[in-house]
Image (cartoon, rainbow over all chains, first blue to last red; front, side, top):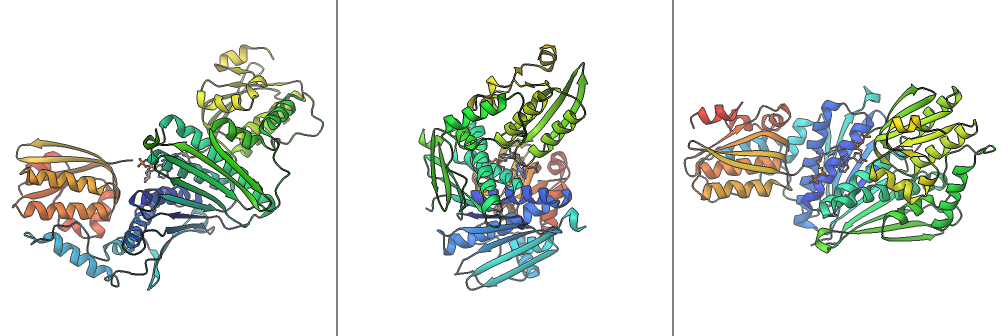
Length: 155
Length: 155
Length: 113
Length: 113
Ligand SMILES: Nc1ncnc2c1ncn2[C@@H]1O[C@H](COP(=O)(O)OP(=O)(O)O)[C@@H](O)[C@H]1O
Ligand SMILES: Nc1ncnc2c1ncn2[C@@H]1O[C@H](COP(=O)(O)OP(=O)(O)O)[C@@H](O)[C@H]1O
């Protein structure tokens, strides 16, 4: 029996992040991930896909982002792979990213800094805060975020 | 601007035909395909994906089926690609497939033939009956079904 | 949405109320239900499709298979369907000439054959 | 589901009722709405998130940006949110300490600051 795997490759556009979420949640549900974890799957896969799209748009807008979804039997895994070869400086550790966020948010009178971009690393900090089982592999040729959730078969 | 394209590669399993339908309809809607054509997209993509899954299960169950969805601006296209190298005999022409279907259905006392498999070619006949713009390219290395629908931008 | 199946008897007919999506993933369940009814001696079936949300050719195959099975016992298989989007695939495939298609379960039960 | 936005005034506050999904695809629309209100001199905003179905960090970024903008005019930005699944991302990111979060629009309007 082949392992049930779905790969979604999408042009680095914001709209396709929605497709990534839709497919991830639909397959997670079918794989038997608990209902109360599905919101977590939706948000975590969305964050990882948004991050990959944003990295591609900076570095290689014509290349697709990959989302690989696998039902291993006892786990449902979601792997988001980007091939951004010009990555932003190594992501800040989650705690630092969140401290910077709180600090910028509390600045009462920003000088000119009115843009909405979050401090680097907030996306990974959100994923880390949500998902217990997550691995990030970053290198000069891109970044992979691998997340796993138990299925009913694995509980 | 890269052309918005989503590629879905899925293990040849019945459950994943649902994912193919879900993604196709969701992207077609977002591309601006008219609401009253979305049922057509759902059914036609489902038929093509079911056919590809069935061909792979006979010939190459470990290899994934490909669904490529593209928003060209004035059209939304769905391409289902199988690589079944041991294809069933060339599909019957649609009219013949449907005549055979009606005939088998009307057999009052079938001998032993109680299986539910449809005569070959019914799937393509349904697609042909639904979709105006469809091209089928069959060869010894697999088969591609390419379907296109106008978007609001193209009307 | 997944398949839902409910069966009940009305006179000498057995009504199967089908809901949700009948496709390559769920069609085996419908097939097994029909086989079980025929094996239990129910040869006059009414398949109520008013709550079906999706039906593809795999689903048609199961209905054709069911028709063959009941006819082998001089039985009948009638459909209840008024949904245009479901009727469409019966029209395309010419099966509107093969299955009696009724507007309501009451009509299907009242009809002979 | 797509984003929906409705704005109305209650006393000296402007309430933005947000519905649907706030993500990388729709966040720009929310940002433009907030910018337009600030440019029109509305510096006390209440963002009602009770009908939000999804909010990611891009949406948080827009809210943080809005907070910075109104504070530049000594204004305020309060949130209305009782949905656990939406509150979760504010907790994870520590932003529950940055935004006043109320249980109803009435509470948010009654609160000072
Ligand atoms: N956003 C959507 N766009 C199009 N179709 C949808 C959408 N949401 C649900 N559907 C329908 O739901 C079906 C499967 O939904 P899903 O929840 O993935 O399946 P299941 O109920 O088996 O888990 C699809 O085939 C499609 O008809
Ligand atoms: N079957 C489903 N499984 C999971 N999520 C779904 C499903 N159907 C709809 N959704 C939700 O709907 C959102 C987008 O639906 P879609 O119809 O594709 O977007 P839009 O409204 O922009 O066309 C997804 O992000 C998801 O939250």
